[in-house]
Length: 463
Image 1 (cartoon, rainbow, N blue to C red):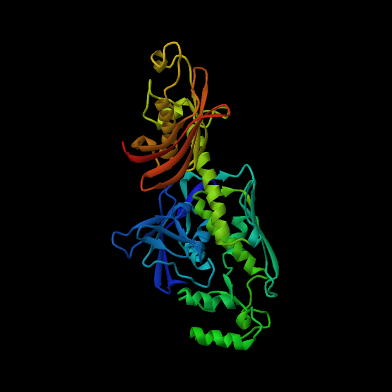
Image 2: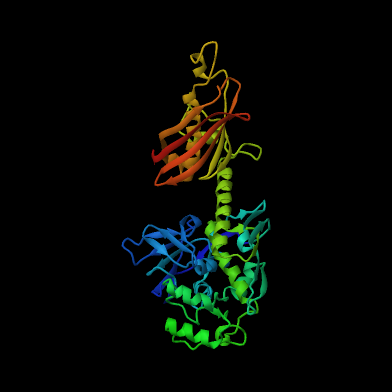
């Protein structure tokens, strides 16, 4: 396994035409410092805005993967990202003077060759991996799509496709070793599509830069050459096209007997790069495409964020995810108003479960009420709010630089009194988070009994 982070040794560029936009484009790869990951920079836009290459910035997957951050949008990035993943690059600045990388021959070879020409630099920083320690899965039963990720000492991909078309049929591939196999056996594999798709894509304003030199086109009609000529005329294609004996338009030879499924594995490599960290795991995929790949990546990304939090705040394997010391690193509250003792569960940007041990020593019991101590309902809501603050602050980056102001509490209900000796379990689920505003659904439990619940609205501000 690669032990150090890697970047490119020197700046290098390649020019071409974007597949879907048809725009003339120049892509430039530049070295980047350790722990900076990969970002695309749109040099053709005012201020050269950038977008990070991770799943949080994916804005469209209808035909390829599109990244976006405000005005900075970059279409069809999967082959660029596959090149970086296959060459095990961690940090890179990628400048573009248009909104789409060049398509080349429909593979990742154009980018791999340039990066290798510039050279790869091992940086003085440890390469961090996300190790898959429990199986993950994603499926779409209606489309017979299944992906399973199992533990492995390195990244492995096993992919299967099965089409009714005789030119494709059922194909398998297994990528075992990126160092030995990627450059020679996977980077040169070209994208493929069916003849029937070409007309549809053109009608949607896509593949403006596409042609028979940028993809393998599979014949899937029963009308023979007449159908090919009809589509050529409708699309005003200049290239000669004929029904091949192999089922591929123009009998373009495959670079590998199973080139289509190898390209599917290449696309998956590019999509996995969006996790934001290299992984150790074995991905077994059946009939998967960008939509399913991205759905899986979101699940793995959530696991990655959770593991980062555990590593940051957990003091030992036997302790909760976040103990009282970790809570105090996140929240500004202190005695006598810190109403959380520990965090048991935390799914970043989704869910938090916290514990408040209610003892007779709580200062509020002195006056609420003498001889009949009951935890004030407003403090139960405050405990919920503080748990929500942990969830929300971790969603926006460094919590030490932010504060959470709660804007409203709706549908508040107090169902049972909370007494000394009770253990209050505080559970919150994030409903939405946009532009610093968050809505959460919270409930407080004692054992199996719900004692309070509410809808909470909050805003994150600079501390």
